[in-house]
Image (cartoon, rainbow, N blue to C red; front, side, top):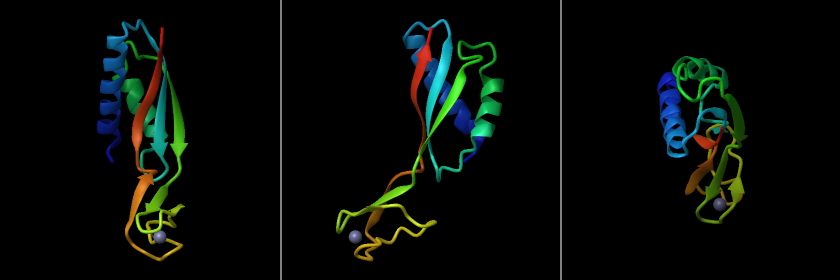
Length: 113
Ligand SMILES: [Zn+2]
């Protein structure tokens, strides 16, 4: 994932919400970050400082909430934490599994003035 593009999308969401709510200032941005998303918080902060300049979001605090990497087996319903990228079900050894969290990067909420 490219942090610059990711931060731009994040800014779009934030500014759209801020505008819709007639915000004078965005004070805090709560973000959900999957532990396997490959997004680096430091880079997001860096690009955010750059992109938020002269917008209502300038100076807002970024709060990252990390979401664990989890998968679920469609055959037996077992939820588990995959080891590395191996998402074989530890219970029934099936491979009919899906990742349910851990890859996301999204804006959860924003706080405005
Ligand atoms: Zn299973």
